Image 1 (cartoon, rainbow, N blue to C red):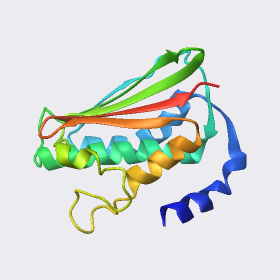
Image 2 (tube, rainbow, N blue to C red):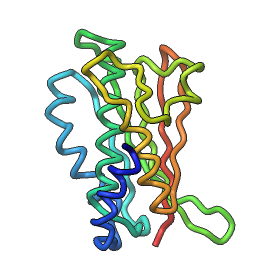
Image 3 (cartoon, helix red, strand yellow):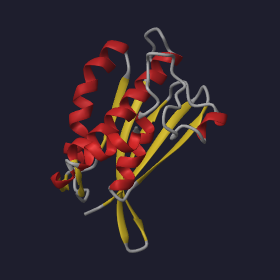
Length: 174
């Protein structure tokens, strides 16, 4: 199913172009701002000017960012079902070099419910979810990873149950 979804999305692959990271992230963030405000979630955004562009399909990469923001929102509302000053999502980016290759690193961090360590090795498997029935499909992270790999990037997740989740997305700079 994941492969079929990605193959369907590949038809849009001709829309690969240089993308400004600020522009790429601002669309998904604008979709979530109202929900974050309603839920009492504080939001920090630190995307410096002057970062190199990345080559990619804007719609696919926005889907990855939307998924990360949605997961952060869910984790924060799970840990803090009522309004709380502790609800925080931060999105930041920086240039990172690995030898001769230049990358853009995007971080999405929340101080929500975290992911149990026993689940960390399974979270990229299709249909694996820790969410209640009807809340998630278990496809978001597996599709996000495939999209990023198709763009020459990757994703990693560090989490401590009950404390935080920190998602790191690495994409080659154009």
